[in-house]
Image (cartoon, rainbow, N blue to C red; front, side, top):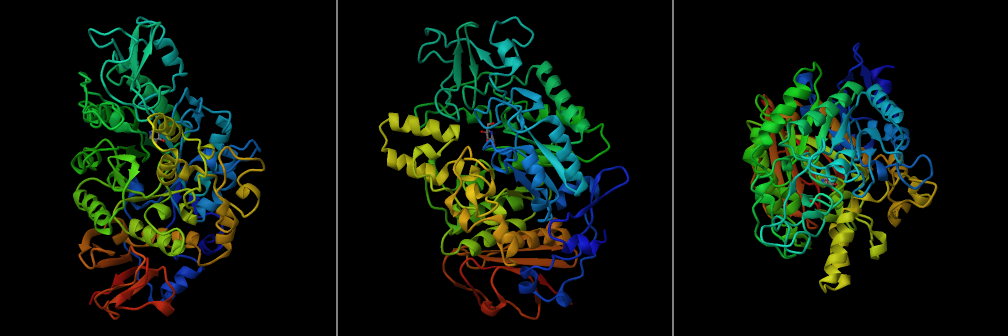
Length: 616
Ligand code: NOJ
């Protein structure tokens, strides 16, 4: 297959394999034959893109990663739940974007209390998703298309149905007795009664973070739901078991791990009470967000799992609450145990104290927060870039305008993110501009966090319509409605009623329609991803903020060697004047408005432009 065929054939894949069978990304020579390129500039004015790509050992620096939440991606066997064969059947949709890797949310055996983030067997696939043979086929099919597979690694906690925990809860002397965080009741209290918990911490999914187990006569810690007991990482046997399991997956052919709340694995051994929050529980985060051993444990993981291997594997840590300084240390290219982390500062901006009390976000707050991380990790460390994932509301509904400026704001937000320094992540459906769900009644929700919050808030006497309004805005289910493949029944996700309602807007918002439309959001993402693969400055260029129009605009420049890429994004519903952009010095690489309305002194609502500056 020639390069040209690969690039112009929709969905035919973009890769070749090296002789060792390792996925190998060819550099793509052009965006493609879709409208965005034509809107941006003529092929003759495109820049020379001959600069060297970063070396393969750090492939993830020039990569874009696509997240699949398998439960909601595609159902192949008509049970209403997405599965691995469904993912395999739609790989050309993902490959068509030009992404480099897929992060797969958990498919391990699990009672599914938290949709797989509660694992009962790390070395098997849950029957609702398929089999190990399906997973092997997924690896093969991804590698064949030049993409890598990043597995989710959920090892802060297991399911309470994991055999380790089942044994641990029985008594204090068995083989895994000390594999979880067991504690006696608070001195002077009656064990098992309210107030006897070892400390006052609340769990992320409501209630106390402690659960009493009569047969053992102790409490166990669960930072999330009661069905997700926290592992005791200070026990070397626990670490040994986890490292062996990770090695088993890497030997099987996976290309790295996204590590779930991995900064929570080390707790202050004193487990002190925390300041009491609105729900009446103590906030334990100061004692587990960046605990005393986290760095040491992750450094050991790197040594034991990755350092002896010749390949280059991705290690990305999900890390709510870490500071830029901690992130620098963790992701330093010489000494850091990780390649990059997911920080949360920008997705906390619209929360007033807790996620169920939303507040508006100003453009200047958003840009200052994102820019702060860009600058903090400028000369050491590396950023992950994201708007969306399975835990966040849909970006276009949250930070954009999902009605009047749906297409414009979805593409504006994408432009801003993808032109930053770091590795961008695209969450399934984001490339179509999928929106929040209508969530008309509590019966439309499935997420453990949302359902627990609703029950607790209503029990406390809060108005159910107000609680529902907050869920509609912030619930994780907004991201979990089925992928909208077609305008047909159930959005082409399944042949039967899906486990969670399909967003009714699939009638017009779906992949099939966007693949037919050269000006779709899907093709805009493809053009953006190609920009990263073509321009060294997009990957590695220094980030310099431009203070123009702070209240509406986010503008910045990326420079590397003699290349400078400038991005201008209007993050508002109103047009905004800008200083005259120098028509002779700038070559437009990409824009989300047609040329006929483009003006060098004004940005239209949610207009985004990416220019290359000519030197000399
Ligand atoms: C973070 C995951 O992204 C989320 O979905 C999950 O509920 C918690 N960690 C607990 O595993």
